[in-house]
Amino acid sequence: MDSPNRRLIHPPLAATKDPLGPPANRAAAVKKIAPPDTTNAENFYYVKQMQTKTPMVIVLLDGEQIHGVIEWYDKGCLKVNREDAPNLLLYKSCIKYMYKA
Image (cartoon, rainbow, N blue to C red; front, side, top):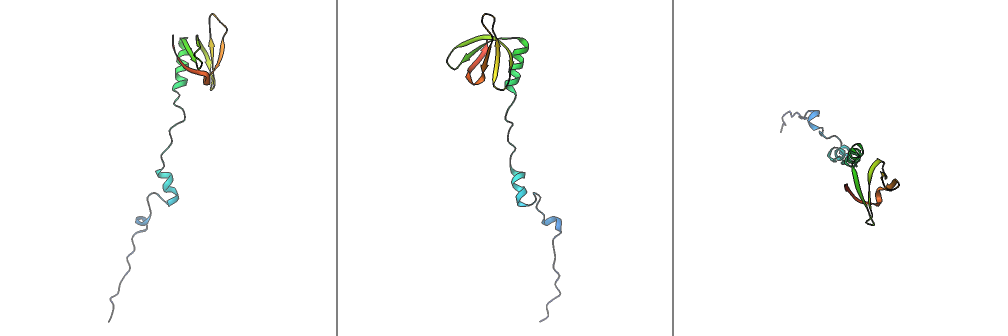
């Protein structure tokens, strides 16, 4: 029995490649990008209140209320200017909430 002359057919090389690349790169391509740590909303709020010199009421964790104007801020503190009392440097961790007077 004679077998007919068979020719092997290979698919083109480009068709065999995975579009995402090797398996190690697939996880990186599928992985979602984490959201930023900060939205800068807090910084925007402080800058706005400092520029307009808005009188603020700052309520501390123990319930004490401090009335004054925010002069400057950094990552962990606020400096509050008060008219009838000495100026204060407040740790943000001690602030419960604040609002406009």
